[in-house]
Image 1 (cartoon, rainbow, N blue to C red):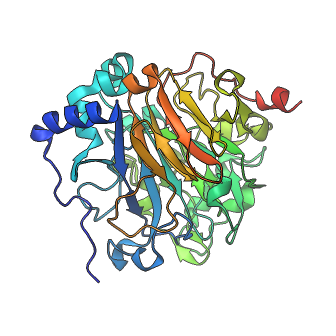
Image 2 (cartoon, rainbow, N blue to C red):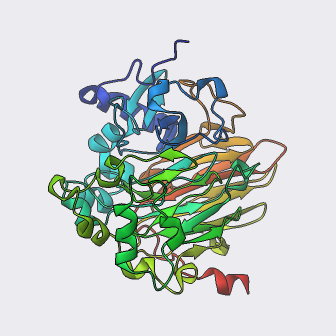
Length: 422
């Protein structure tokens, strides 16, 4: 089977300026994005992200199945054997494609706002659907300091379990997170020593939490986690660093290289260094769930007759607002003007309607290389000015959107869901 090339007809970076201006003017500051598919060689696709099942191995069987779709991404996927644009979102206008990364480089102030562009010189966050049949290895993402040792950026992340993309639980609807209080570094070191002796037993040192649709988690850098089998919406920092600390998952062997891929080469066998990349205090936190669990909160100021806006990712990581996300629901026949303090990446998860001049339609099944009408980048200028969204269908129109750092002065604090729930 021959698959379409995702970058076919791509406009090169030095020719983006003119088409970008036209696209922004025609869309009122909105950019249509095409699906960005990412495979993982060590995982088993969960088959819920609407990709045609016959196209799961469109990158080649040796690359593994496609289990992720990335949204409004200017971050490259750190996969061996990757195609050059893997992980990078593409904009579509009048049949022509161009990279969102090139668009931000060209008109950063207009697209993501002067404050964000001047500080980061890029869109520093992204989100994705992460969808697997079973659990993945207990792993962590490096802190900014540790990632800098190999010229990378750290990666805090967050989860939201969208009900629309979780019609089934798949094989293991639980996520191991952190380590049991009282666990010692010597015990963890022993797991690494046993890497080639069968299951290294790291999950014996951890605790699994049952996953619940419509809720989420914050995952700080340096914290071990083994995501379970719910399809997960993941706003996160714009990096793809990780270290796998579990060696066998559901009978699949995880090579040592995936533990140390983002660590200095001279430290690849230094077990004390490898253990030291974990944030020990956060891993053995006696109130781990209290400090990291999230339930949605309705934003009353942004809700009205026939629509409501909910915070689904909020709270700070190490005292910083790095990313946030909201879920907008509009009843059939209703409409609203969406006005936010910053740019966002939008994905439609239910229903149909319109956003400004762009159609919104939730696909039932997507062929690899097919362009859809479910994803939009809402530029800073469009967000500030306000965008009209209308439900033209017979069911609720639901969209998820995520934001960059320091966007919301009224972001709820960590744990605010307790008071909201009463």
